[in-house]
Length: 173
Image (tube, rainbow, N blue to C red; front, side, top):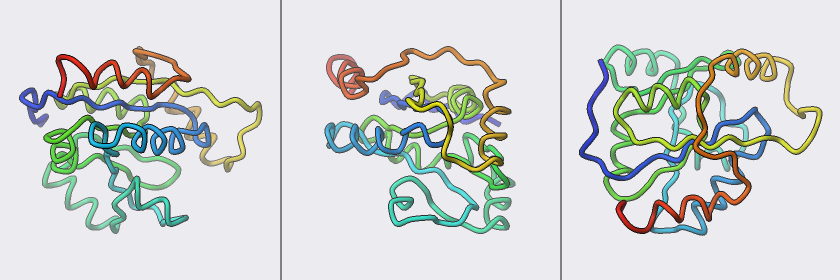
């Protein structure tokens, strides 16, 4: 059951693109440049941590705990990707949006799920600048599968910070 969050005025900027396209780098850059107005929304995942920077983007939990949270309807979005589970915990999202705008990496499915949960989401398409992806075959296959879901991007953009600044002035907090 979707939880209504229409009372939260802040929005989520969801970067959507293939693995290795630079979403994490852009998120860190935007969050640093817009401190106080923009915060990273962490995803919950069952995958193993690969590097220390992962702590900026993920809460790491066991598959058993993840499934318990699914049963408790804690997630606004759940996706299986490359053999791991990912989801946005409603409480974590609400905590960020109660203070400021949020930014995260999401799949097309994730953008739709967040919108259906009542969040204000701006989907931003990120395209890699290289021809061949440096990622594993399993992740490339998962990327191809998720691209079968089509969403409308508000912007496909290089100037991410300038785009977000539009929404951090005026009518939104």
